[in-house]
Image (cartoon, rainbow, N blue to C red):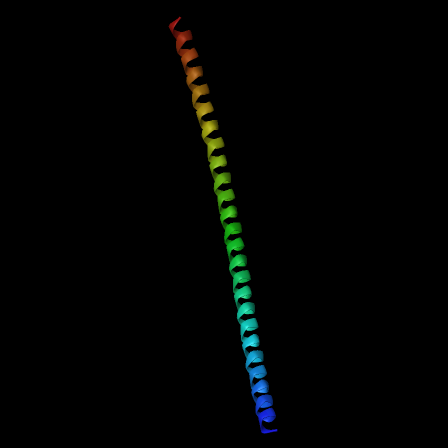
Length: 91
């Protein structure tokens, strides 16, 4: 009987240790997954912020290009008018 009791005690101790190790492993996996999800969420937020900043920069460049195009057109139109006027006076 003593051997059976000892075997039962060791079996119970082994079961408890395995349960504790299983709980620790599960906790570690959960923590790792939570960290991974958190990192992914932060990454997507940064990507979104970068996309927004890039979009705003493109909008500013577009507006500047339009303004520059208008100024160039006005300059060329004014220069052409002055050139025509100069030719008329010379004739």
